[in-house]
Length: 314
Image (tube, rainbow, N blue to C red):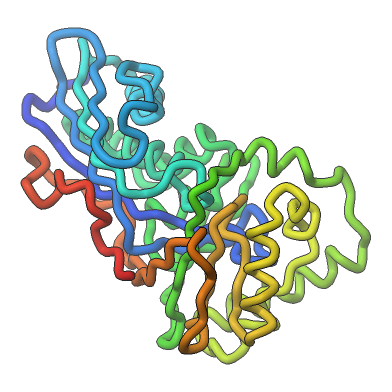
């Protein structure tokens, strides 16, 4: 039976995310209350993408844009392509800073394409949407919290990615320190060795398990639970300012880690009163997003078109 495409616009709000959280390399992630708003509708032909806010003037305005590519992949998974579509992006998640901007674009594209197909959420259910998003991204640690919200544990089976979302305990208060400089995930991954010492792997396994308990039940354990030996030290030479800030915060008793592949720093507990990271960093106190990607009918409203960071508190 041929697909039926919706005639009106749809929109989605997708949260920023922080992956790894220290020891949970490629598996643990957290959704943060900083959002991109994206809308799309089927057109008579061609692909047009407009971008406001982060990435404006830099990102492609056609089907090379990551939202459009994710939409194309989702339409393929559903079984048919529309004649064309138009996308409007209001981006607030900084690009290439370790806050999941690419995962947000992928999740937005997957969710928009599902919503533009009649009965699309049944034809491509939530589990399949996660598998597709992770396949496009290459790993599930950011797309899982972006889709599901909250604190997520993700893993990959032969059939694809899976994830669970867990409620976060009171007392976890994320703060991100965002630098002006950008980082590249590919370069950060290239810095990792092919093998690691068995003792380091064992330490990370224990701390990742402890981190699940600390985030969901006992935030007092967040400092020891965020110790990492698998990726942060290997990447330190490529982002010395990030490494120095993480060490300074941890020395002050703050559970600080590199956010994703960096260079943003994530603190899971509040920095001490009067702590200053310096003028090279923007400090944002962000709530934990518990809803994940949220789809609705209609165009973006006036508030959603505001490129100022929705949900961000400084």
